[in-house]
Amino acid sequence: MMRPFSMHLDFKTGELLPHDRTNIRKLSDMRGMFLDTDAELRILEKEDPIIYSFSERVLPEENGHLQLATTKISPGKVGDEYFMTKGHYHRRPDTSEVYLGLEGKGCLLIQTEKGDLESIDMGPGILAYIPPYWGHRMVNTGSTPFIFFAVYPGDAGHNYGDIERTGFAKILVERNGKPLLIDNPKWKRG
Ligand code: PAN
Ligand code: ZN
Image (cartoon, rainbow, N blue to C red; front, top):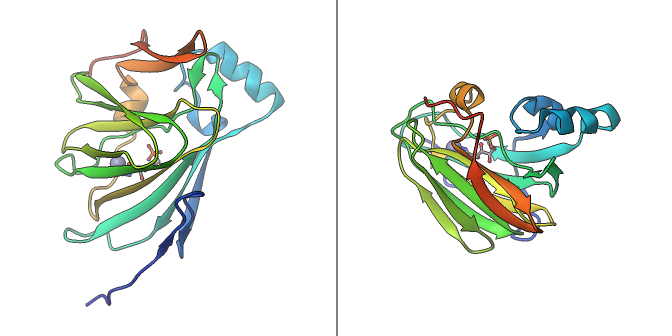
């Protein structure tokens, strides 16, 4: 039987100590996920920026356990679309998740496979509940890193393939210096 434990979560930096691994997602890992592929190429000709990183405490991938992670999304845009996570459904789709905003300004996009989409403005202290079956992607709509903490069932797993194929029904772009949610012309119904 696992022994109880505690960890330290730095609310300013999102650092989770101790953690077992940090995953880094650069723009080259997300080819084709942003709308403006010409802007994507122009950036990649010069550099390959880190779009986000997330640190995880590896816990058993079993029903009854929970997984813990913090994510930090860099500020920035590809064309006029804000940096974001890849987004996913859970491999076990009947599992939920909690996202807690820690630092910066963000927006959570949550959608069903049919493209029923909701957005939730995120910031420090805002807690979002993602019910079973809803795909989720976080977007940094601010000019500083956006940091959030996530808790989800141990055996939820990640299904990235469906989002890679369909995208999200809406995307977040900057218009007149402010975030605007618009229909994604590349969206394919799941
Ligand atoms: C989060 C995400 C994390 C990175 O912990 O895994 O923010 O985003 P992507 O997984 O979409 O690359 C979570 O939702 N876990 O289930
Ligand atoms: Zn998730």
